[in-house]
Image 1 (cartoon, rainbow, N blue to C red):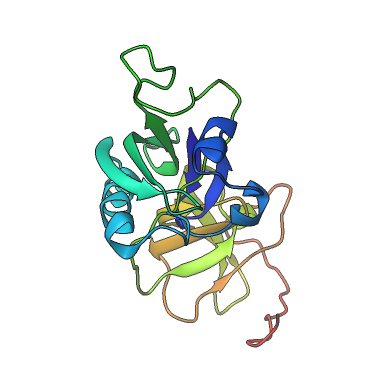
Image 2: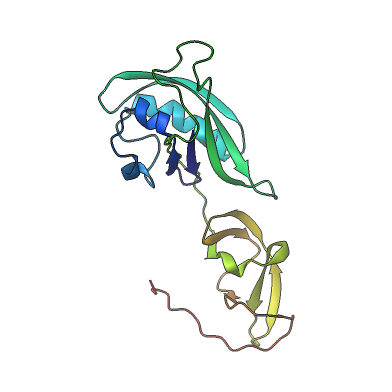
Length: 204
């Protein structure tokens, strides 16, 4: 099996996949785009297309020919399964390989045993006009606290396109140049007077 994040980067590959593709050090591919760079463009295309379907929330299956690190041909029958959160948003994609133990014939040169590592790469969709905030800024019921011109707290309900481990990506609900409170307040109430310091635009 392979685990791929929504940016198309490989997070995990089973040992069976590593062995079959003859990858001497899988660690160098973690965090890199999937499919791996030693695949040709023609081999990458069907994998990327089906990964994109999984990112969109659909279970997708593809059978295709790839090459290992030594240039030898390997056939893969792979199912991509999106992992969803409670709101139905895709968190990551799990790639499922058919007949991993060769019980239906000699599908693979080596059985894909439990606990072995595999890898994958996903091309994400482009989204414009997003507001990116620390994940901690998003409160219950998809609300964020904003600060109005009188320095008063105002709750806003926003539309969240996606989240990751550190950030939340908002595609509607906030106005241009609107101030968002990033401080974790214990008991925030609408209309509370606050003092704020605006972040520098080019702050790293």
